[in-house]
Length: 176
Image 1 (tube, helix red, strand yellow):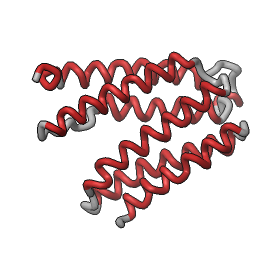
Image 2 (cartoon, rainbow, N blue to C red; image 1 turned 180 degrees about the horizontal axis):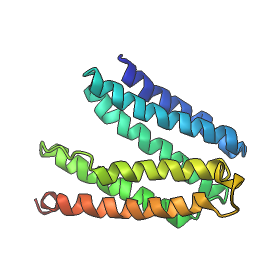
Image 3 (cartoon, helix red, strand yellow; image 1 turned 30 degrees about the vertical axis):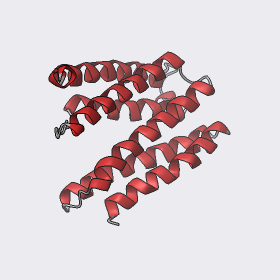
């Protein structure tokens, strides 16, 4: 197994540890672990592309690992009262719809590449959840404003935008 795939597996292994720490309300430790797991996503993609280590396993498991990490953070934060449930539902609904669209496309031999808006969406989600998990740090040093909440609203907006963009660009798949 190559290094990018090992990093993806590591991210999946970190998810239950992250959940346990977060549910025990160790926000800072779980926040740091969430950020570390998110960095493995950036690193595994970079290494796979740079060294031509892209595998079928990685193509399937890497996006699944990303969705599991984000889903775990959202559901735990809803349970802990850190975010509104409907915000998590919007994010998760988009993921299910686009994953379904990708599955339909794959069955027809079509690959739906990640759009820039999808990458921005993921970055905003990770940033927002990281700030929320870290209890608004480092912004709390300078302001009492809930920057994590504002970032989450921005992430939800980009989530909706990117989901609509994927559907419009691939509407022919829905008609076949």
